[in-house]
Image 1 (cartoon, rainbow, N blue to C red):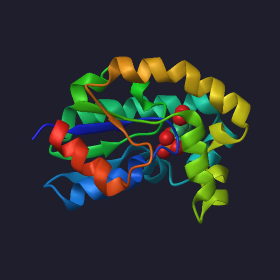
Image 2 (image 1 turned 90 degrees about the vertical axis):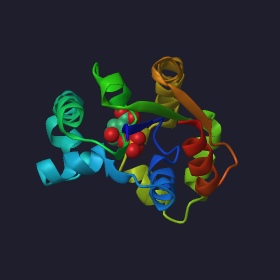
Image 3 (image 1 turned 90 degrees about the horizontal axis):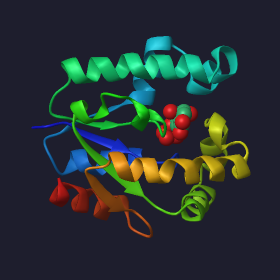
Image 4 (image 1 turned 180 degrees about the horizontal axis):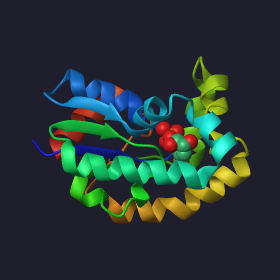
Length: 167
Ligand code: S3P
């Protein structure tokens, strides 16, 4: 089985969809942010605060190399900026979870743990800046994606079913 690489903007629901996909398939799940936090033994937020974004991107690159060389049969959820890794297409089939910016923010705000969800994401502190980042990235996400799943107003379960049908 070829890996599936889930990409998309912060808060679009990559983690929730990944959990549904593994319930309905033989894939194992992995998350690049989780890998980085365990490699570094500290939170992404702390890595950004202490080391800066450039350092974080360097670890993402290391993770991307390792994924390409060593990981199979896996559904890999990625941080919102991971799509920039040059070897991403060699890791697996790229699936973009897509939704308009306002819908993403609305969904996070409605979540019972909304505050935590905003707090843990350094690039989601200023919503105006986040919108700029979204506008910049969306065409790039579409360019790198092999498959697009529109997640707007759909449950994670339905998105996972659609994803498995499309890959
Ligand atoms: C980032 C997204 C985050 C995390 C880091 C940077 C980004 O992951 O990797 O804060 O550049 O969009 P999520 O997409 O899971 O929030």
